Image 1 (cartoon, rainbow, N blue to C red):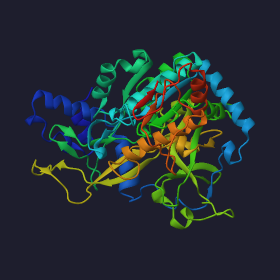
Image 2: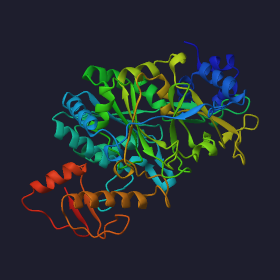
Image 3: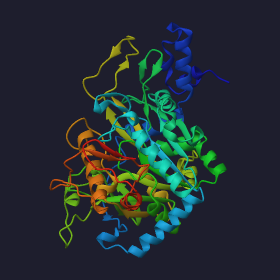
Image 4: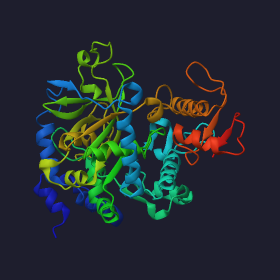
Length: 474
C-alpha cells in the first residue's frame, strides 16, 4: 500500500506532509491517520464545482417555487380520523420493534458558554436535567409504553465522542440498557483555500470540520449502524437534533403517517412565527419537495401573504424527520449520483503557512468548508410526507446564551407545557397571559410525555401531590 504522502503528491497536495520529518512518531501517526481518511477525489470534485466556479450550489434556487402542502393538525382543520389512524399505525410499529431514535449530537455548547458536549447542557426548569437525559427518559418511556425497547443511535464528532460516552457511562445510561445506545462519530471534511489547497491546522494536523448534519446519513452507513438496524428488524428512523428538549423524539402519529403513506422520508412543518424567522421553508420546485434555507429565500416570497392573510410560504423546517432505512442506505452508499449535494461555507480558519511554518490567524474569511444538509434528502425520497406540528409541543431549541432560543426561553416553554397539561387534568395553576405558571415545577417524561398521558396518569393517582415551587412529578 502506498504511503499517503505519495497520493497527496500525485494530487498536488504535497504541502500536507511538508513538516512530516520534523514531527515525533505520535505526530506523524496522527497526520497519516487524518490524511488517510480524506477522499482526495471528492475534494477535487468539490473544489472544481463549488470553489473555482464560485458557485455555492444556490444559483436561481428560488425560481419557480411553490409552497409545499402539509397535513394540518386536527385543531387547524385536519382530519381527526386520519390522525387517529396514524397514531394506531405508529403504535403498532413501536410494539413491533421497527423504530429507532437517532440524534445528531456532534456539537459543543460553545455558543452557550459551555465547554462540553451540547447534549450534556442542563435545560429543565427544576431538576436541570441535561438534553441527553430528557431524550433518554422519553425513549425509555416509549419502550415501557409499547413493550419494546427503542434503540437509540447517537452521532457524535471527533471533538466530543469520548466525553459523550463517558457522560452516559457515568449516569448509567439514564436507565436505558447500555447496548440500547449506540455511538458513532460524524464524518469530517478538510478545509481548503481559494486555490483548492488543503489547509493545515498545525504541522501534525489537517484543518478538519464536520461534514454537516446531512453527513449523518453516510455516517450511519459507514459506521455500520444501518447494518445493526437491519439485523434488528428496524426500518424506521426517527431523526432529531440535540438542541431541542421539547421534541417528541418518539411520536406515534408521525411514525404512522410515514408508514401509511409508504414514505421514504417524512418531515414536520411548523407554521412560521413571522416572515423573518430563521428556519428553512418547505417548498415545491419542479414537482419535487425541497427545503429552501431562510437565507436563500427572497424577501418578496418570504413575506408574501395568501387570501387569508397568512404567510404563503409558512411551512418551517425544524429538523424533525423520519427516514426509511433503505433511503439512508442508498444515500450513504458512496454513489455520487444519489448522494446529498455539498454546500459551500466561506470561513476564517487559522492555519499553518507552508512558506514559513508559522500559524496564521486570518482577519477575513480565507477558507472554504464543505457541508451537507439533511433536508436535501427530500428530492431523493419516494412519497415524502409533511405533517404540521405545534410549536408549543415540539420546538423550543437551546441555541443562544441569551435572547431568543436560549436556556431561559426554552425552560419557560417547558413550564408552559407542564402548566397546560396540569390545567387539562383540572389542576388550578396560576399563570400569566402567555401561559407561564407562577411556580416552577417539572413533569418527568417517565411520568408523561404528552398531555393525554399526563391526564390519564394524574387521574389514576390515589394521592395527588400539591404543585408548588420546585415540585417534580415523576
